[in-house]
Length: 79
Image 1 (tube, one colour):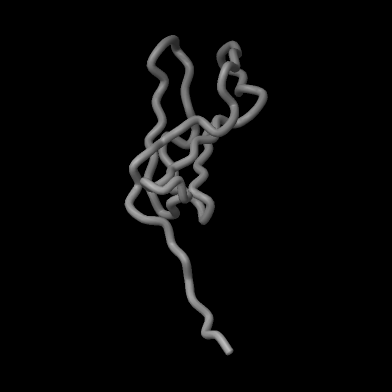
Image 2 (cartoon, rainbow, N blue to C red):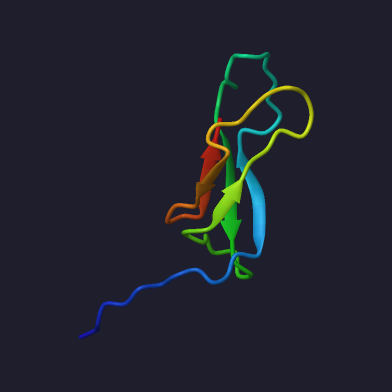
């Protein structure tokens, strides 16, 4: 027989765009799809519980929420 065990990701090392890149829009309308990023450890495993801050760097748009915590797969999203 075997005993149950948990596998968890290590320390967050990489933040990458997962989906929602390349969009454009006009204020005050939201983008058509959320911007989703993936937080991974050195082995490429998703890291849960990592805080990601989002900010607009060009233009007059906004993001909501401005920060989020990665889920069990390492994904975080904003609009």
